[in-house]
Length: 273
Image (cartoon, rainbow, N blue to C red; front, side, top):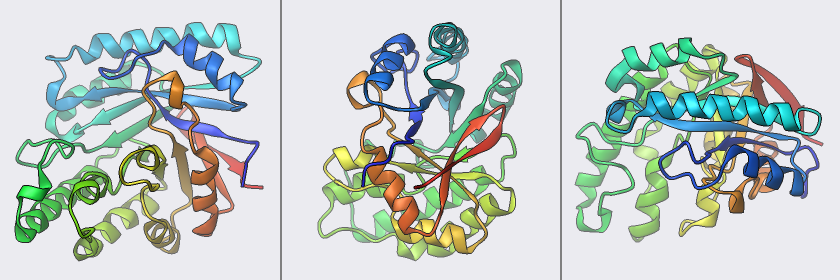
């Protein structure tokens, strides 16, 4: 189904390390694709805060959003966001940069295992089943602790390990042995009235699916979760708004009647119809 009211809740500009296009270019493409708006969620990885000059990158990101708003304010909703990766690795810097700017939305993510390896860099086909099980368990225990951090609005990519394990490992590897921990994470989000992100990025990769799976969206709703964001996770104009209708359909399948974007750290609902 094609949805007219499409808002991309996860977009990276060239202020992110892997981003390739300016905010202005992203705005032009968003208009061309008929989006009602999008959120710039440039990266701020706390484990590499000084090394990658994230303070400077985020300052530039903020400036670019305000400049774009002055040009496109009557045509697009442009949310001023940030994706804070590994916040517990340097919670002081995380809280400091969030307090410095008037963000609309703060996204939290976890892209590494506790041993420091990036989820995307591990050669899973070279590991035994038990080694993968231990890795996944360590990831979700760390993500549970991350969910207890108070200074964020949206938890991104709940099932990130699946994107890489299931793209490489055959047969597909189940993470259901971590469902108790995942349930605790979702319960914490629901209790704190925070949002869970649906990310369409993996639909364009080897895994060819949207994450998290619908069963975890249903679990979130049954635990009292109210808010869902939908984002492409794009790093270029080529994929801004990509597969949002498919993501919104999954949200509706899970029993939600709306998804949301954020304005001044408050959710704004978009009815699914």
